[in-house]
Image: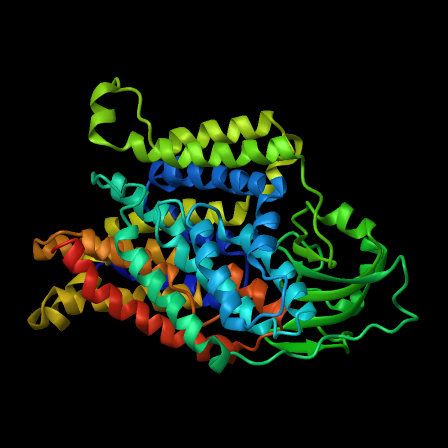
Length: 514
């Protein structure tokens, strides 16, 4: 074992520990690892920076803006209101109307704004209909994940693997190629939620009661999910003057399914859900900031106007159709070599038109981009390169092949799924894809088989974050607003992970042969 392999293993181990213990933001942790690799000569400055100019990473950045444009258009708010029954109904009937449609939407939009818009509306509707909101919020997060598996732009993980494939000289995925497996997983997952969500999810958990003295015509409760830029993160609540900063009073904090009203000794953490007492100016002031991921006060946001709403929907449709047609061999043959009508091309055009049409506020566009996710993705490319340069990917691939060679590639595919899925549950889906991609490439090269089944498996396994709330941001959002416990995700999510695993291992080699 060379000294470079030892350095990479130590750095990756330290990275995993730092991510699990939440020492810093994931982007800074991965960037720190990249600096170690740069200082030890494992990667060059050019290799370190390649991820920051990667086309897939820039595409993800622009998709954040497009998703924000659709969110601000009011189209999603109107859609969910049409999906939710207005008369007396049951949980199953509502899920039949709601879950397939949300899965379809999330195949083309970033999951976080979908959940941020839908979760408070669904919760308010469930309370009005006297149905447990807890029967709908985890399924909401899960179906956005399931829908995201079905297209190239459905989740950042798919675009990361797609870009890594192109970096090593492979074609990458077409717009709907991953739907060949994603649609089967999504259908099975939705059916599972129909049948078992009421049996495995808790009934309504008690909510904070606001007294008449505290609540007036001006003041009312607001649920606020803490974002990455909240200045009080890791500070004691008693040491941070929330009322002076935001003109509001904290009444309750929810974290990991526990509710705290004695707040003096607690520290703020990212993704905590606060129940605060404030007036309507709080939403107007902080609704578009990165300080809070989600704000819900029982009211709907004001749409930007009917014309711009329809323009936003039309632009999204043109982007999807254009990128799909642009990938066809006929289209590629008639175009000059220097023009490629791919997803990057249409996403760029859509973003610029939305900005100039003010579908999202162009003067505030930086607020709508999750920069830590982008830095994490950019660093992931460098870490993947370091694993290949040092020989770590070949070293791990040798061990996996030796361990399961006699059982054939199906077992190795299963091992790759399990490793990727474990990583995505304890760190992040993007980091999981970055760590396992070079290993999958080394396995396929050493065995002389197609790498496609392994790459598709990585996409599915990295997205299938159902068993814990920490692997996917939408799970964290619904955990707070639904007041779920960690064990609630294990109870309903682990069987869904197993279902996804079985379908993937059986069908992926049939669709993409070894």
